[in-house]
Length: 116
Image 1: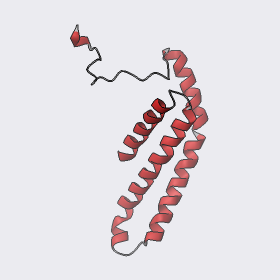
Image 2: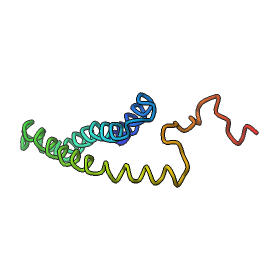
Image 3: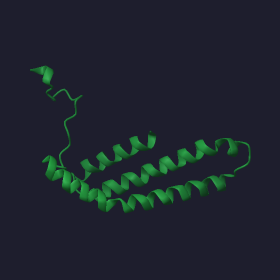
Image 4: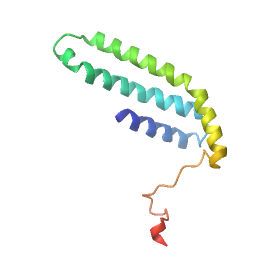
């Protein structure tokens, strides 16, 4: 859950920073950072008992995190082209501007149907 939050937050942070441009930077950058969070959490949760019992050393834990993360980065890099194709198709199909942020429902200036 922490990795997903990190991914979404960074994606939208970079979307605002780049004014909706550089989709591959936003997609891959946010994914690479969030997958490091995910890999670290998964390995420590999975092997915490072995680590605290002395069955796994810190070096082994780091190697497990590294291999898990490397796999995820490779998959993330490979999904860039299908991601671009999907965005291009959806942009035309849904007739949306991918550079525009959706309205914030918590913003006091956002009008809701109940305001009518």
